[in-house]
Amino acid sequence: MPAVVVVGAQWGDEGKGKATDQLGSRVDYVVKFNGGNNAGHTVVVGDEKYALHLLPSGILSPGCVPVIGNGVVVDLEVLFEEIDGLQARGVDTSKLLVSANAHLIPPYNRTLDKVTERFLGKRQIGTTGRGIGPTYADKMSRVGIRVQDLFDASILRQKVEGALAQKNQLLVKVYNRRAVEVDEITDGLLAYAERLRPMVADTSLVLNQALDAGKTVVFEAGQATMLDVDHGTYPFVTSSSAVAAGACTGSGVGPTRLDRIVGVIKAYTTRVGEGPFPTELLDDDGEFLRKTGGEYGVTTGRPRRTGWYDAVIARYAARVNGLTDLVLTKLDVLTGLERVPVCVAYEVDGVRHDEMPPDQSAFHHARPVYEYLPGWWEDISAARTFEELPENCQRYVLALEEMSGTRISSIGVGPDREATIVRHDLLD
Image (tube, rainbow, N blue to C red; front, side, top):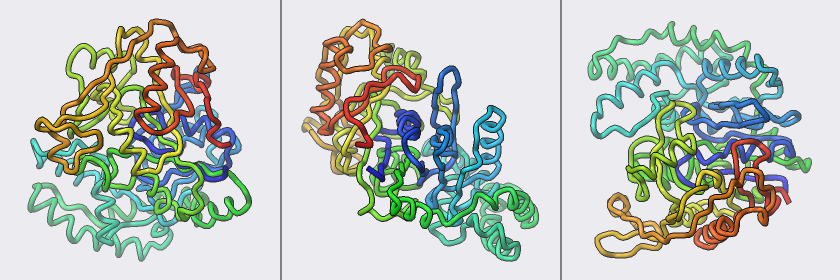
C-alpha cells in the first residue's frame, strides 16, 4: 500500500497529526500538500507533547522523510522557528524537503490579512491573520513569490516590486497604513536563502521516484473537508484544496498513484471561526465537550465551537473524498454521558435532508435531526481491542460506521500515540 492520503472529514482539528504520526513509523515519506501555518497538529509521544503548524507530522518519526509540497504556502520565519524548537528538543529535522514551487508568505500579506478582516467587521471570515488567504490570492493572480525565487535576487526584487505596486495602494489609500518598502521585503526574504537552500528540491520528482521504488508515501492534509475552498462551507473556508484531490495538485503526484483515502473524524464535532454549524452546542453539553476534549486551537488558542457527531457531514466527506477508511478520534471524551445524540439528517423549512442541502443558504438554516444512543461510564483509555470497549461504546462506533457509510478502521481512546484501537491496518 504505497500511497495513502489522510484528510480531515469535518471542519479540522480531528486529530490528523496523530493519525499520520502513527502511520509515520512505517512509512518512508510524509507530505504536507496544502495550507500553511494557519492550522496545527498536536502529537503526544510518551510524556512529550508536540504542536506542529507548518511541518508535516512525519518529522517526529525517525527514518521518515517529511516533505512540504508545492501546494503549501510557507512563512519562512515560522518554518525556522519550528525547526529550531524541535531541534532544541532533540528531534532530527535534517531530512526535511521543501518544494521549489511552494509559495512564500511575505510580511505584507500578513498585514493585509489582518486589516482586511477588521475592515469586514460583522462579515469577517474568522481567519487566523497569518497571510494565508492573500498569499493564495497572489498565487492565482500570478504575482506570488515562490521558494525558488529566493535564489535569484534580481527576479525576487522584480516580483516584490510588482506585488507592492498594487498592495501599497490598498494599504495606503484604503486601509490608511504606511507603504511597504521593496528593499525591506527583499532583504528580509533573502536572509533565509542560504539556510533554506539545502532543503529545496523538485519534490514531485522525489515522490514519484519513491513510489516507483515501492516506497510508502502518506499525504497529509491541512484543515479539512468542510473548509475546502470548493467543497466546504464557502465563504467560511480556507484558501486551498483540503480534500483528497488536493493531494495530487499539491504534491505533483497523479491520482492513479493513490491507493487509500483515509478520513479522520472526531466522535463529536468542532469548528473554529465563523460559519454555519448545524449541531453546535451553546449549553453545558458544549462546554463539557470543550473542556473534556481540550478543544482550544493549537495555532491560535481560540476556544473551538463544539457539537454532536454529524453523520450527514460524514457521508458528504466520504463522497467528495472517495474515502476508503475512517479514523475515529477522541471517543474517550464521550465517557460519562447518559446518552449520546447523533445527527442523522437535517430539517430545513420543514423538509428533511438526509444529504447535504444543495445550497449554502439552506445549510445555514439546517436544524439537526437526532437519534440518541445509550452512553457508557467505563474508562476506555486502556482498551487496545474493540472487544475491550464497553458494549454501549461498541454500539456507538458501529452505529457511526453504518450512518457514515465508511468502515471505521482505527479508534482513538486517548491522547497518547499508543492509545489507539486498530480494527483494520491502514497500510495493508
